[in-house]
Amino acid sequence: MSCSPIHDRAPVLIPAEFATEWLNSDQPLRNLVDNTLTRAGSMQEHIAATPILKRP
Image 1 (cartoon, helix red, strand yellow):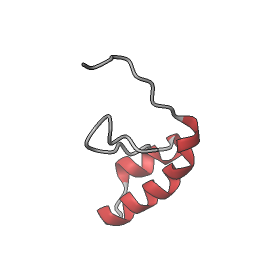
Image 2 (tube, helix red, strand yellow):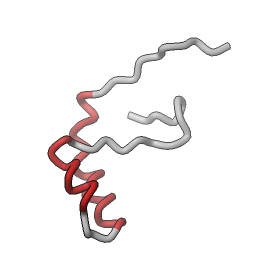
Image 3 (spheres, one colour):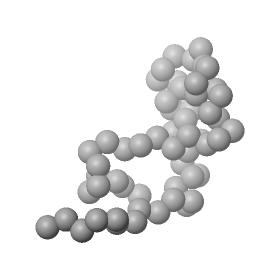
Image 4 (cartoon, helix red, strand yellow):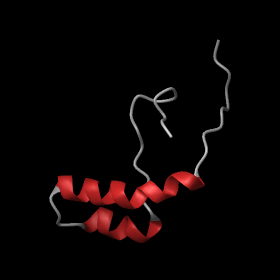
């Protein structure tokens, strides 16, 4: 799922069980982001984009 038609940046979905590690990690930033993206991949099946406003 791509959100590029809606927004120019992609949000990172942080699984609840990973939130503490995300906020308090001593990992290098690149490793933390990679780990987060790996864990968040399975969350895509739980989200949906729904338009709330029609634009001209």
